[in-house]
Image 1 (cartoon, rainbow, N blue to C red):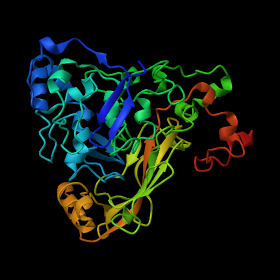
Image 2 (image 1 turned 90 degrees about the horizontal axis):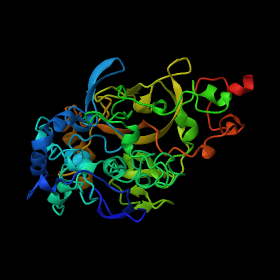
Image 3 (image 1 turned 60 degrees about the horizontal axis):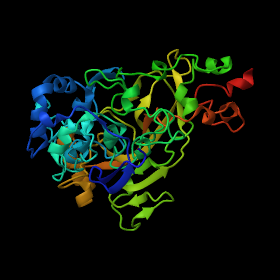
Image 4 (image 1 turned 180 degrees about the vertical axis):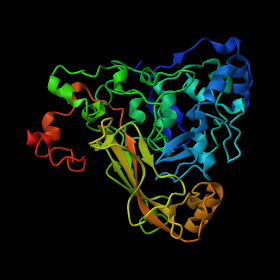
Length: 456
């Protein structure tokens, strides 16, 4: 099945031909689904005749709400992709039709979207097995007009990596932009890219690990759900002492499995590592490409930095994250961590984990000293007008943040925990790669006086 291919427009971003894993077809629905259908909600209405309970379950999940109540930095907040400030396009607020192209729903065009209307649920984006279901990148989650909705609806089945990857590989507007360990190479990976999803070996689907009940998919992103508790880890399948050597097993008390077994990320597709909005808007540079063929500068977005075969950064993590919440005060002279792991060397629940850290420079209110939501897409947006003042005003109207009329740009960081692109055991980190003279750990930053082996 290696020669299964899909050609089309993925999220309307670019023409593409990629290998995908075979779809897992379910029962033939042609006897239940007759059509014709003009819109996605019409398909969902037909699905609800038999699956109303499934839709109600799904509408309780964060894949639908894009928000959940969490206690962050001692404060109870309702936080998620719905309202978080990030260091990519700043927020979905005011940018809805573009950002909500990845929502598993139809028609989230503004703040008035009806989350209680089950006909807005997009069943097909997760259950398409034809490889022909395509959402427009600018139409609030609606599919392209060219999609044969009847054909797709009659051939639904279990989700594959392709279904999940349609959004999770391309979050942030392109392949590998946000996640460093999730990109198009995971659709049909080799063993070297990911030993679990190796298409010629284990060939795990996403739900092999993300075991789903009532449409609730376990797993949390630090960026949007830093204090959520819908976790699972390697111990779901592996024992606490998986190695033959006892010295290696001793490491598992303080070192996460991912730290040794994900020595590099962005193995085939470059991932975005930095985004400086402050330089956007200039005609001086022109469009500049880097050695990976990626934009190093674009007038609409500023300067970028990309990386391939990137060595992770390491930090203590106890399962809970901290975050910058919309409206929090910040110090523009300091780097603000928008989302970060909690834990320390003294924390009995913490382990050393690998992370991608995305660094940004983004707009803030120079009088109120908080980060602003910027309208970048659509009428009046920065990508159209190249006017930061207007982008800040329109973004503030949508977000509810007051805008003083004065703005600047300040440095930020977002931590993305690495869980995928697990290497074969023979390619995992060796002792000297951490403990040698040129080891990759910054021991003092982790709370040690130096390499702990030197003290023995």
